[in-house]
Length: 313
Picture 1: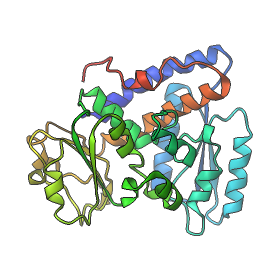
Picture 2 (picture 1 turned 90 degrees about the horizontal axis):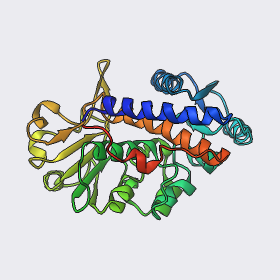
Picture 3 (picture 1 turned 180 degrees about the vertical axis):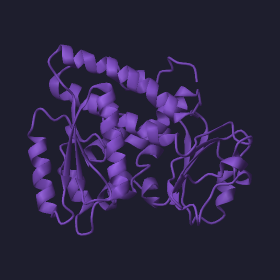
Picture 4 (picture 1 turned 45 degrees about the horizontal axis):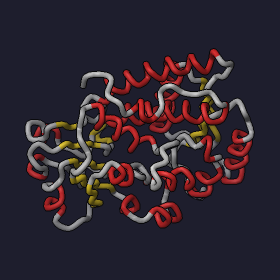
């Protein structure tokens, strides 16, 4: 499954919708916040800002020193909450030690929470209220739909380093480290699409017994030296979505050994070029949704349009 190709199609449609906003005097705007000089975070933000420029979304970059305090960070977030020209706020994770990630996420106005991590937004998914959905699971669902992968009635197995994904929402939100919430609400989106969902993690005993039963396998462990999905671990014809990221000797790898999985799986996402581009595309889409809700401008490209297959795979 080519995430780059699908993400490009999504950006093209978002760019068309941005023009609708501009015709009504609204410039959708995303503000990003980074604390410190983490090289990987800077690269991720550079990609996000580049994508914003491509589709016509204004982006503002706030880079704070490594010694920024939690109260200073939250004060900036509050200022952005009150700035009507800013429609989306993204705090780049992970945060430095000493800063409570939950408090930071909770301080972002729910209507500007384009990461979809605020308790208000995550909770709404249980009730099928698809407004601001976490970007990675939203991207996964859009990718599955684009490639005509039927979810209803299928057995989906999620492997995630944090078992938080499978816990009841109130427990998950009250205890979660946002940096470990990559697949947050993937289970709920799949359940809402009538799949049967099993949650596993890298320490699950007899993991292969679960993975071999999966019609759809989604993995996001991100520790390739100790954990890898191989061909013998999957059911023939399964759809494999790799959201894991490991950096080894300067190269980026996923959780899946592509050589052994290709030919056994019906579809598999590469790393890089699979889930990553879709995640960024969903950030743009969430920014558009947030701008629409705050300004009253109707977006033609809503969540139903996003998951409608207009293009061939």
